[in-house]
Image (cartoon, rainbow, N blue to C red; front, side):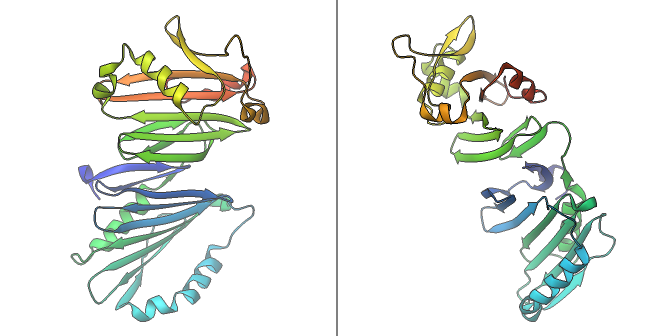
Length: 291
């Protein structure tokens, strides 16, 4: 996990460095708790969860409860060690098993209990000291993002989302990654499409592709998108100016959409913002999505 052997992973307000072949395999945010699982081609390598507590937490008490609940783990492990001189707010324990595998457990409590996080690192047999080094490097690279745009990075994509938007859903398919964020019933959708040169072969322009993509999307229901004066605009059929029922429920009938062709990465980035008032556009400040 040093130098070019790592890439940056950012998700729901936190980020850290991971080996190049570790990627997101599972994600969930429910009742204020975010959970992720990262895998390499062989096995699960990292699982973690984090939350923003409503009140102050006592990390010492949490560790005491963990020690009490991990008696079985200590019984099957060959030995264990508690890491010292960890970064501020961190506590970590490393378990070694008879077959050479290692399990690292790391806890983080931010100042004023603003964030609590727990991670497990599953490591194959390796040289002495390697596991402790990997665990330390993981903790040292960890960052919490509380001010300004929030970074998101996984697989081969990286972008920023304006402050105040939280993830509501995500889908990852070969060549297509879609993430949706929400804030006060407003929705912000972002699509990252790979192999742009192939996708655009049958299209007259990037804008024409974006119109087809938006009008076929199950995530944006109601308007009909078109190209006007070189921009994407949301229209209503003149003979049937109806609204989708989800638009009425949200009370959000306005749309702003944009597309970008990243030629160097051979990628298309499409974004669509569903909002209520013109003043809601100020919430987009700080994003690098094409809006």
